[in-house]
Length: 436
Ligand SMILES: Cc1cc2nc3c(=O)[nH]c(=O)nc-3n(C[C@H](O)[C@H](O)[C@H](O)COP(=O)(O)O)c2cc1C
Image (cartoon, rainbow, N blue to C red; front, top):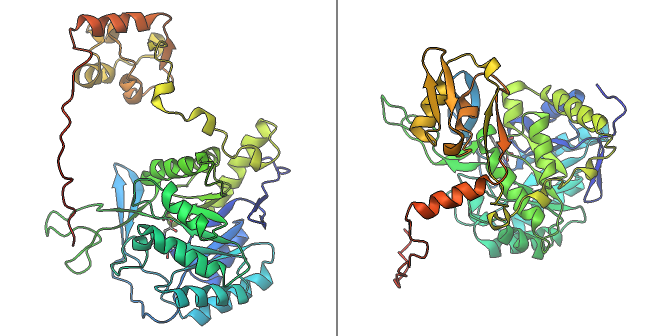
C-alpha cells in the first residue's frame, strides 16, 4: 500500500483527511456508530437526517429488502426507512461528543423541515452544536406529504426558498441533496444555487419496486401485507448517480462543488465518481454490505492508483473523464471495428455463437469438430456481446478495422432503406397527467 499518498481534500472551505464520508442513513445514526467508522478511517460523516421532534417517527417493519442476483448479494437495497427516530437532543449531544473526540473529522448535519421556521431552527441548532456543514435533504424518496422530501426536490421554487432560509440562518456551508427522481438535475440544482447553496450532493435513492412476493402478491419489503414505491440504493443505481454528477459538473452555469454517491462500494466506483466531477464521496449500501472496514479498500485502492500514476492530489483527478463525455453527434462514425479472437485460449463453450446468432450480427459460424467459433468479419456489428458472455477474460477483444465504415455505409445504402422519410408531426394536446 502507498502510505505517503495524501488523500486530503478541501470542500467548501472544510478540510477532509480523505474524500470518503458515511452518507446520511442507518450507518450514521449515532455517535457510537460514527466513532467506530472514524476509527476505521472514514474522513467525515453526514449524520442521519435530524428530526426536529415535531413528528414522532416510527419506522416500518421490516424496513428493507435486498435484491440479490445469482450469487451476488445486495446488488441493490430497497428501503422504507424514515428520517431519524432519535430525539434531536440526543443527536446534537452526539455531534458535541464527536467534535471533541474527532476534531479532524467534519460533521455534516443532514436536516429536513416542512416549513421555513423548521428548516431555520434545525440549521441553527446543528451549527450551534458543532456541525461543520449542512446537507439539506430535498430527496427522501417515500415522503407522501407535499412540501417534504423528494416532493421538495421536484418543486424547484421550494428548493430555492428553503435553501435561502437556511443560508440566512447559519454561517457554515450548505449543500443541497437532490432527488434522482426527475429527468434533469441541473435545473433544480440551479434553484439551490440561487437560494445560496455552496455545493450539491447526489444522489439519494431512486424510487422503485424491487421485488414482488409471488405467494402473497405483496411487493417487498412486505410491511404486514402492504408495501410502497420506495428508495433503491446500491450498485444497481451507480449509472444513474454517475450520470447526474457528470451532467452537473459539465454545467458551467452551475459551477458548484459536488458530493457524489450511489453504489460506491469499491475504490474503482469512487474513482469513477471523482472522474465525472465529484470532490467528496458518500456511501451507505457498501457499508450495509461489508461494514465500516470497506473504507480500507477505498483508501488503499485510490492511494495505489494515484501512486502508480504519480498523481499527488485528488483534485487532479476531479472531472478527468468529462472532456470525453460528449453528444453522440461528435462520435467519429467513420471509425469502425470488429471483434478479434485469441483462439488459442478458447475453451469451446460456444456461448459467443449463441448470443451472436440470437442477439448480434450472426457473424459467428461454429466448427463443430474443433468446437471453435468461426468469425465472419464482414458481418460483425462490434456489439461486443460475445465478449460480454465469454468466460475467458481477455480472449475476445475489439480491433479497429480501417475503412470498414465504407462497408457498413454500402450495406445501409444497398438495404434500400429510404434515407429521408418524412415524419408526420401530431399537433395534439399533451396528455393529462394523473393527479393523484
Ligand atoms: C436504509 C436507508 C436509509 C436512508 N436514510 C437517509 C436519510 O435519512 N437521509 C438522506 O439524506 N438519505 C438517506 N438515505 C440515502 C443514502 O444516504 C444515499 O443517498 C443512498 O443510499 C445512495 O447511496 P448508496 O448506494 O451508497 O447507498 C438512506 C438510504 C438507506 C439505504
